[in-house]
Image (cartoon, rainbow, N blue to C red):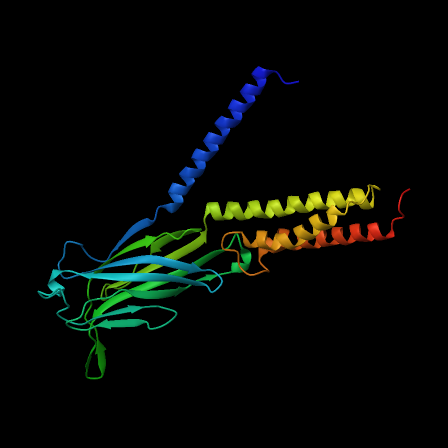
Length: 292
């Protein structure tokens, strides 16, 4: 028997460990929930003839390989009239993989937000250890002029501020230096991977599926090979577990369709072993002679 004093020490130790783990978990949440805010300055913000651009990562679709960014524009005083409308046209060029790659805001209009879809390179089948790379390219220019068959552009200077924060993902960015300063261009490279919390929870689900399968197999083995009595409740248990593992598998954050690496590591094996155990227990119940 454990003494009363030792019981109290064990309870207090477990409570302290829980508090520490809980605090660490909340600290991890605060870190991951903070949106990274980065400045990509093409020119000084003190100028009055620039456009301040805010880029906000809206969503990430690993299966389609797409990252959506919303661009918002704030033209400064020298580009606006007394009604805060453009005194001249401004065209925004991007490398959007879906929809238009340019948007023109004419004289007398306001610059409305636009959505840009960036193509990402990566394999969602490597979930939850998948990672992706993509590039955002933005250029602002005045209305195109054609003279003697040659196209001419007048650059519109701008600054770009980036907010990158999507739950379940970690986004790292870096600016790609431009070889020429003739145009007002920003080129930003994105590296996207699963956040620590999303990856850890996915691994936890994989381990949970594996442990449930081991327990089911051991229970079935004691019946088939150990000669223990077949309990009819085992049929319900194994049958329910067989079909419950699919929702459990889909509970992994951002899980892609069936066929990813996580399935080959745990889910496929778990389904096969559980189904084989269920069949073996049923056959044992059918073929084993009843005991008197």
